[in-house]
Length: 325
Ligand code: PAZ
Image (cartoon, rainbow, N blue to C red; front, side):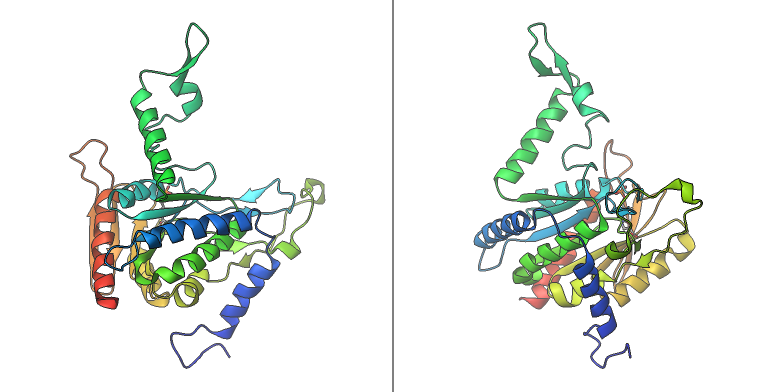
């Protein structure tokens, strides 16, 4: 039977699904190295505590997870996420005094790099007469900012960047992050902006070699990714402040789906957005309110993440006051 008496506990089947997902996943490369950097990062931020309260840390997830179809992966299922939301939000959280664990899809947008052209290596660098390489004057300021801001944040121990590609890596690293943030209690935020696959091919049923087209049309059954948000929220780091995102292309179902996620996963905030307008506006859904947050279109370069992060910081402060006065 699925149901349990205590609403705060997860049904046994959900826990078993999660356990078997992790047991059958390929081992995470560099797991020990990731754990070590997380420990150093969190210890450092705990030591930066003010008035006995830990420094605030946010885990921002960004970009989309891939679903490999072969173990020696040639083909995979992917999604549209560019990582802009996560990268821009990271900048605003850093400006607001938070430390950020940036869990991002390899190759997607990076904090402080949004103004760089598409091919920064070829477009931002030029070769001088004496063959030295220099920044093209047109992009010099942007390049300088990207390098200095990123390096300073990493060197100061307030930005930790952790890359993922597959759904397996994403969930494994998220579990490590939650274990290290658990001790920070309400000072930690999970800001889950990544677009995470709902379906996957379990590792044990995946073919080793490239799928051959000679065998005719591909008939493949995908399993459902276990509802990791429940486990994260209820078991891995239950005192943290949770913000998940809900993306739809049909605006008629968007708010109902966001409301459902709020209740089902006991999120503190769900950010509802539509694919085509996601850079212009989002709707912040909480138990008490629905607030539309818009980009300031009168300001060149203004981003919706600026007022959005401001609102999140405000609600997080109220949460900390409530649970840890
Ligand atoms: O990465 P991006 O800036 O292109 O897009 C951001 C987003 C739409 C992926 C994010 O706002 C979001 O809604 N993430 C959750 C998607 C989902 O419903 O799974």
